[in-house]
Length: 154
Image (cartoon, rainbow, N blue to C red; front, side, top):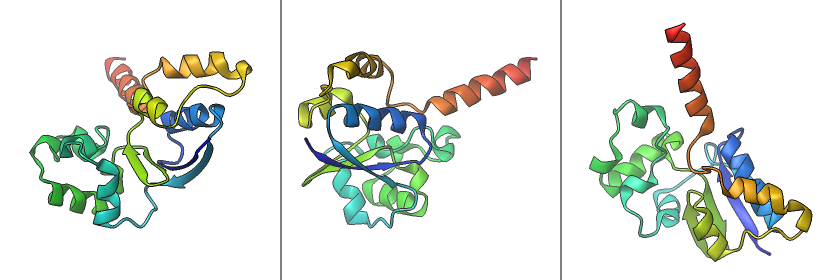
């Protein structure tokens, strides 16, 4: 099993679910606060690999949601500078195992890379339920938006 360095936004429900899947698969998860990490351009860039710049961004970050920042229209250098200034813009989680890094939690990519099969049969159901959920989006933002919409219509 792997030692997984997991850069998260502390308190994010999906990050908690993602860590649960990793732990159930027998991985040792070392969680770190992505927003408090001291990033350099080079270190941050490493996690993004060959992905297009638009896939580096947290789509639920306020400046992205408001349209102030359009990830499709930003070059690599500008994106990295913005993320160093405001780490909330970084897509989560950032995951490191050994000499490989990934951004986001695509369950197929993670399963093919380090495995997500539970090591204990009693965890099969929990893992199956989590694997069938959207672990990429931020559920709190969807809930807040729904809650705000409900308040406006009341």
